[in-house]
Length: 376
Image (cartoon, rainbow, N blue to C red):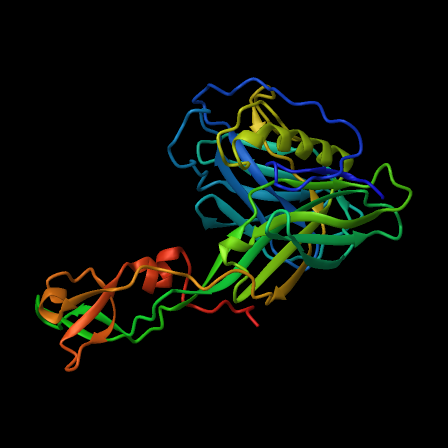
């Protein structure tokens, strides 16, 4: 069996084959409340938008939300060439629409914060990314899960170092159908029961990967990634019961970038993602122009993003279950306007059935009733 490097930020339930032994990494904790800058993103020289996310580290024991860096000036500079300016999208996010880039040139990132600090990356070469060959979902009975796997290859043997991200979306229903709801009457404080105008029984929910997923074929004769596991979807989650989709994004990395993300993956095993409290001092290729000793987290790269989406209807799992609805008189229901109703009940419809939002309003499970534009 061919073997390749695979580093992930959390330990999954299945076994990965790793070429060589990886020693446990025990870095010193960041106990400072300084809030060092975290820069996450890359220059997409392909046909899609480039995005840069700016945030700050937290004390390893912090529980507050991550602080985002707003009102910064973000740009990418071509060596001996033009400057591309990013636009702020809010919440620490900055974007650059697709451009015509010179893929033989080198680029660097420049960030100037609202308080005047300036950060500059090293110049980086553009790394090509081969297309994703295919994505497959294979049931693993030992885990009672479907393992999502990716396959790719570079016939020129030039890529060698890879990184992946993914976003999963699934369609689901609630246990009960809610056809009525309690609303406030127009122009008054009284309530009434009316038919729902929206279907809150069917939803779609999306989640992005938080793990650092890396692979390398550097010790193989051919630059081929075969059946690399990205995630295991538990059948008990019911994500696979109606329809499931996964969008996989693939990036070619330089060896320096791969080594940075490998170190960060081992570092964040106990925290979860780049934006969680970081327990070590792992730095990349970005420096403060006035103080090169200041800690800055992030690695700027330039590459082509390759994407592929698949849809699956494996019908795995079970229909959601809830306790039987309670019965209320209409008068009692109107005294509890926050109740979730399912339908009328009784020979003269003098009662209503009520249940928890989780059982009859799919939005309570984190989804949306708006069908995604890409959904098939």
